[in-house]
Image (cartoon, rainbow, N blue to C red):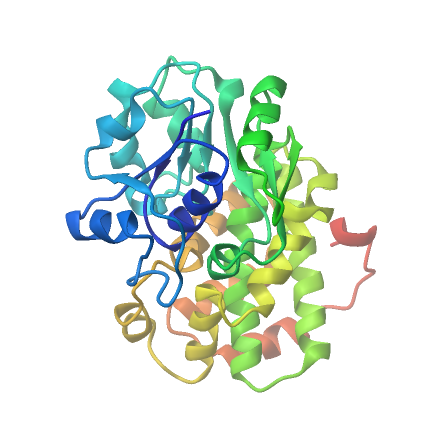
Length: 334
């Protein structure tokens, strides 16, 4: 397969470097100087100190997309629609497309596969999916053993993508739960901000473990309400990705939480970040979806309050002061 990777940030670059070891791969970047770096096997702005094999790169979106057997789209949520609108005339309606973007569109609350369906109205919906899992870009680029999930409903496309992406150090599983995998990947970024606040307050593993466990319950409730399978949330796209993002200092969303707990303003934190922390942008639409579907997300609600200027310690007190209740049925409990 000839794979086109759309977006040359840290994750787009990392996955392109992985896929290029299996077959023809082209990566699209906006800036000519970035194309030059990628062609030399480096991306110093997004992956400083990391080297990989030279990549075929272009600033011409049509050149990347036309003739590709599959598209992997790694564009931040706020620019996703515009890029795919520009790509749309060059995309055949049967080409499998995987979103690598773990966020929601702020103005519509749509998942990225829903954005794709709107932008590409003639496209085979069964060939729109996501790639999601515990995949910190720097570790993938360094060749550390990892695993991920290709979630797409078309079984032949799933098998072809699995073969195209899987390497000796990057294990790929498949499932057909696009909704669950996509919700899990999006909501975990919100929860990683909360985990970062726990770290920033100097609290220990008991607090972090309780937070991550209850965060999984929240994510599962939302995903099931939107049509996802509860089984997905116990897998790589669910608990796997949640653990990686909540526990790693490489996580941008975790870093945002740490800085918020230190008393810094959100504006100052975001202004100095070179890369997008999707949890910041996805918190409000995640809460909007939850409200529309009658789902209670207490941790996400407190993250929203802190992002709006609230005190992380007051949010912790509110969570700890909630009414006592049964844990319910495992991760889907209330």
